[in-house]
Image 1 (cartoon, helix red, strand yellow):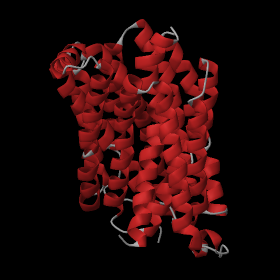
Image 2 (cartoon, rainbow, N blue to C red):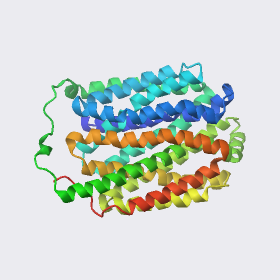
Image 3 (spheres, rainbow, N blue to C red):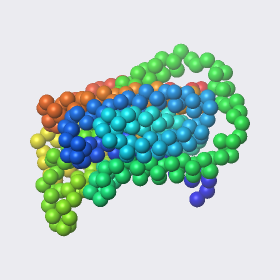
Image 4 (cartoon, helix red, strand yellow):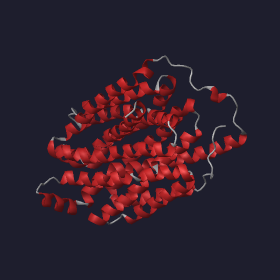
Length: 405
């Protein structure tokens, strides 16, 4: 494997680790702390909320620092910082301490998306497929959070679910430093500032404004959909799949229902993440408008079908709505990568992820409120409505994206 491929692989692993760390607590709260600490699930979500606000809020300064200082340097800070924060969270002795730890994890997690995606879209061609492959790794991190945390709860305790990945991340940070040392140690040259030479035309500015509004509106909606599905799915499966989880645990001779629930979530997340590869190929071939409308329609159908379902049918329908939720992820990043100039790309991604992850934080109280008062069926109807709103907004996209001259 040459140095360039190793660099891309490490960036992809970084995306995996980013989503792993931010969702470990989702499974810990659903399957361990409600029993060990006797705190209701809806109350535990309160302590995760500041971490997701940090995940969004610090995206903009992370992108600004990357453009001004060093994108590669910020990736090193990401790996080592998030690893150390996760290790510290593993030693928490109260919900408040967990909340503080998750806030610091969120601060470092905010680095990845504006910085990692700016590197991916600036350095390699076939933007749609590169973003899609990178997105699959991120979704495998989502999937593995449920699987690994369920395993650790059954075999080593919930604390090890924070500590072990933290140690691995610090090691990856040291490896990244070794690989990218020539770029890190070289003096920063005046980067691509030539983009400001010719002012953009009025037609380009109008088209950019229209697409930007669509990007940020759909980013906000998709943030709620993504967070509601990825964070709540372990709890949804804990309620809806007890029948087949118990049967499989009994059949295997092990009473590890938590591992079975985590395994189901892993399978759904992993299979659904492959949708991004199809989406990436279609983006390069057909552009974002028809792809985006198809993905939104899938969300509407499967979210509306989920209320009242249990066991095998619920598992199949959950796979359907996760295909829609994950398939949407690369589309906005693709549009930003095509439209934003290189010198400011990390900052534009920073703004996008401030919007995205701020809505993630808003989604947590929404999940807690809806679940506490109405149950998950009402949440599914809300998400079906979000898919319908996305479809209406995306229908206003132009057939061809505006790009800088």
